[in-house]
Length: 147
Length: 147
DNA sequence: CGCTTATTGACACAGGCTCTCAATAGCCGT
DNA sequence: ACGGCTATTGAGAGCCTGTGTCAATAAGCG
Image (spheres, rainbow over the protein chains, first blue to last red):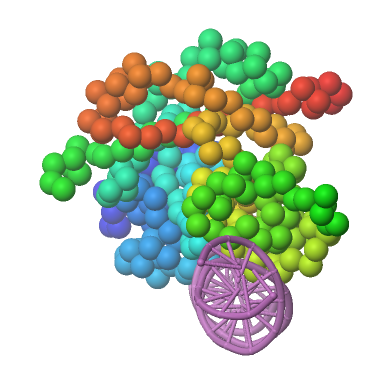
């Protein structure tokens, strides 16, 4: 048993490492914080939230950029403000976003537009479809109750 | 017949007017330029492109903001840079975007995830779905040919 | 045709994000 | 375990997109 607690690399940590990126303490902190948030967060919000270690704001930006590139985070435009980032599993999935509290749930490929729809779009537009995006917005269970 | 050519208000011009906004020459130029582009454009791009009249960059920003609010334009985050805007019809629709040249085609509600899918998502997540977004990405007819 | 007032253009300014660079710490080989 | 190579970090300066201000202009209305 080592003196310092063993830090178990999470699935996403391992993924970064497999791609040749170093698994540093700041990166781990940022990823963990983003994932635990379970909703879109700005770099500033994450920066404030990371208390265990003194992580520079620039590193937060750099890591979020990296995660987005690798597919572990999704970037979203904020109207007239900061960009927001959401933790994402690496599998193909879609999001269900609460319009009230911002909580995000992932749903898997079972809900994707099926092959027939894609073919119909191709027929209608003469495009050769390679990829799609899709989000649902509404109220989560917790926010449906009171006004 | 008036001396100066009559400027026919387009459908979107009329819509702005109906909402109580004034139909100014700069606005018309910006809307026309955005619509003719047929793809996502940044404020700077539009500003450079408008040659017929000296339109201030601030006005381009203001008009794009206005269009987005009214539903005549869609705003998109650009990775690490400027926001882009796309002309949109006011009806519910989705986009098919060429990954090569950026051309965008609108498709109508016929291709939306149907009622059954929405209900299934609700059942799976306990959310109450109100709205969805969906885009398709691929190669347009012109870009499918050569490498 | 003139009045009222939304809109414009120019510029100053704010804030988000990036770049730079020396210092630090992963990772790998031994 | 240890040392070296080098990716990564943190701090802060700086860039650049986007907004606020304000006098001048012009759209819309009677």
